[in-house]
Image (cartoon, rainbow, N blue to C red):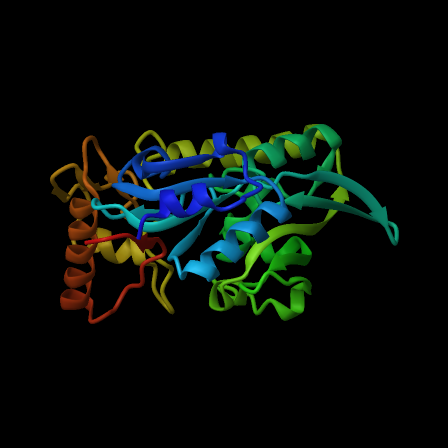
Length: 306
């Protein structure tokens, strides 16, 4: 299927400057690995998204929705289809029923939202401030840090369904669980969300954010490309501790390595391929199963051709 020809022959509303063909996904993933996507396009608003979903349905094209690429491994042969990067940005503060609320776009980066809320002296987002993804990606997987998950401050989420319909879904109906939601299960695309926050002081908010930043610098290998925590927390066990107890800290396959700073992180120590990272992940899973009888689950999404 010639996706380039299809797109160029269709009357898309998307700016041609935001459409890229044979785009190396190494440029768009925090792991810094991945072969080329047939097409990579940035969607800036709802109409553009509807437009591309209609084209995808018409021609039965494979697609995947991307945020900041911070929880994704793209295999070395790349992705056959369209990668849709959600670049819908919004930042609107309102007061509703005596509560401080934020309406924010799916494409907004979490770190930038945190800085804006600091300036506005609004609290409740501090624990999440170091998550390297976008709002949409964080909601989809119910990202969390320092004892707080994004579900804890969400009132509702506006999504687009695969048929192009738009719906506002309340928190209670999103079926949030540890690192999952029905947004994943139903393949909804997050457009924006409304958060409930509290008034605070810049001093208190900054102090918390600085503490969390210091913790990340000391405890996590943020100086290397990675996708954050590679495996999900277990039921009754700490996955990183099992990996450490298995003696796997520092274990290396090619350019992929189990971090010596935090065993829960697989890192790209330099020049790693997706294949090496996935081989290391499988070796870790096999070793933990053999030593402790536990099947550990991957937190990172893997896409693309073998």
